[in-house]
Structures are given as C-alpha cells and as structure tokens.
Length: 199
Image 1 (cartoon, rainbow, N blue to C red):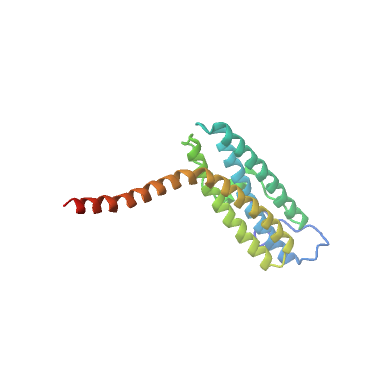
Image 2 (cartoon, rainbow, N blue to C red; image 1 turned 135 degrees about the vertical axis):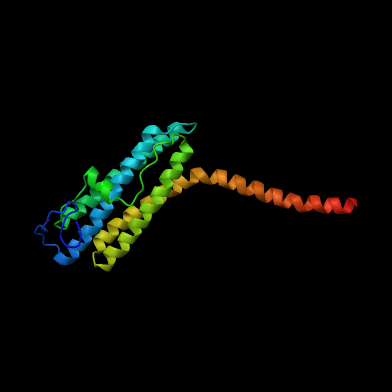
C-alpha cells in the first residue's frame, strides 16, 4: 500500500476503523512501510528455503538444518509484520507475485549447490534485508509509531544474529588466508637479512 492509500495492485484500499491513537495519515504511511518490508521478508524466506532444499557438500546436514531454522524465523516475522498492518487498519499485501515485484532482494542464484556458496548468497541477502529493517526502524520512529519501530527492532536483532551465524562459516577460511599471508610477510624479511649476512 502506498502513501496515497492505494495497494500495490493499484486498487484503492481504505483504512479500516480502529481506535488506535495514530492519525489516518500516519497509519497510511506506516502501512506502506510495513507492506514494503513484508514483500522482502516473504522473498527472503523463500530464498532461504531454496538454499535449504538444494545445499550439498560436507556440511550438508548442518546447513540444511540451519537454513530450515532461519526460514521458520522468517515465517514468524512475516506474520508479525502482516498482523501489524491489519492492527493499524490496513490490508496486508503478501502474495508471491507482490513479494517478487516489491522485494529489494536480487533473485537467488540457481546455479549453486556447495554449502559455502549458499552461505555467501544468504549472507548478502541478510545484510541487505537488515539494512531495510534498520531504515524501517528510523522511518516508523520518525512518524511517531514506537510500537512498529519496536517490532522492527526485535526483527533487526535476530537478523543481525543470523548474519553473524552465516558469516562465521566464512570467517575461518578468511582468517587462515590472513594468517598465512602475515606469516609469509614476516618470513620474507628474515630470509633477506640472512642472505645479506651470507655476503
């Protein structure tokens, strides 16, 4: 739903009656923000399930289970966001077509199978989604809707935690490369000094 009171399918959607003490103008703007993030939340959930179904490799079972947990969490956020829309008197717009059209996320790559590649793809998407959620915290707080800002804050903490879990799978390999590079840089000057002494 846009700030003009129209839904994403172009049909006018009036606000339903509520005794919540937020003006219809504020509620309309908050509903637009919520529906925008609802689309991206639905999209992220389906992308995580795509990884869950198709992951292969040595860490298959661990990642298969992790991705399933992540998808279940996202399903909870879908409900939280959609129910907040309806509590504000709006229409939650959450079809698959709407999610695909409105999501901020890029399409999930279908040519990957290895666990590490899935972790990278999901980490990129969680980072982008986390940014959207933080922007939504600020926007709804600026509009005076502390409850919606608090809902987004709860989601943000969990998304950052999951991003940490994903990145932890990648950091060991990075740290090994950094350690090996640092060790070779330390060894090179010693080798040069030894050569000079030999002369």
